[in-house]
Image (cartoon, rainbow, N blue to C red; front, side):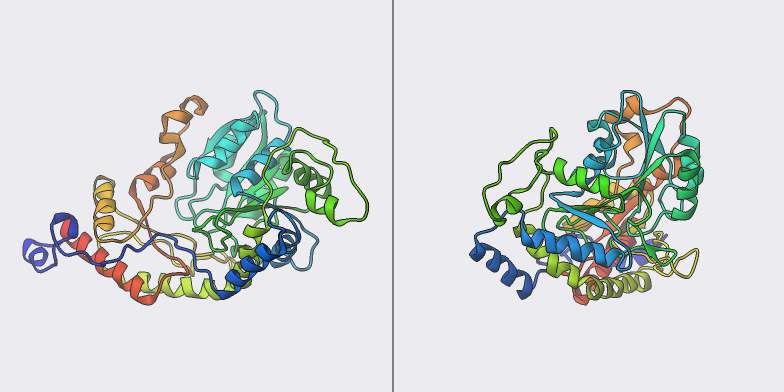
Length: 407
């Protein structure tokens, strides 16, 4: 707490009539595309093949090799991570009453995919440090009706996959990894997304690899990969590119009642080059992360666990979200104050268990203390590859002004 004299020495926040920290709004998670992406997009347009085709196939191959270069992985490029989650849930063949465990702290798509596939989401609390589910929190949610577990690698941190996979294997339960935040994340020196039966990645505008909108499903299961590929494009036996680029005329046939979830080459053209920059962009975000950790440490807030936090020497944080924690009673005021300073911030996420939409899926006596406390206290500061050091220092100046005044 600052005394009145200290407060009076601070600039007044813009929300209270003071000058804005920035004249231009700092967009949260703004992606950065360079000349390589622009040239690839132009090449796609000139080729005339803008739908799913050779660039989507190349992106799939490159992404699978990035995740696990020494093992065969099947990758299916899709139009979103939500599509990947839904297809994985559909392939579970859920029946009425079948349950799938999902974290209480996650984006709504994680639970909605289960509901759309005909299953019942059962929520599990998260570990207070990693903010991911653990074997202990999952075990509390297990019932004889549990068919699968969706593990969300939250904000760039890995869930403890060894203990989770051991529990799942013991019970004969499928594991789906939601790795939307975790392209670069490793657990035990192995990329997340290579542990479960299926894994789902996001290439949304704010993600560490971006195609604007897009996603990927990865699996080591060849049968699952074949089914997902067909389901992602209306259940057709062959996609348009294969039908039109092989000799002779090929009639299309429909093997399943599928969906329209495929990724077009226009999106994959961005992903091909964005993926090539994944490690250099990681270094840029790490620099911003370190500026925040060094410059915000004396303010009345709780910083995220350090990027160096690890339970073993091979646990890599993807640095996807930089989340501070403040007093719950002040959080929404501070969100408005950051916006008034022209600093884009976010909340990742409101706990699903606090929303009326999901009340009917809650079981009597269940508690989600860690997820709900965190969701009421969290603010995500901007951290992205389009940011400069000057942008990061603007965020720091705004934070010091705001927290000095309101706290």
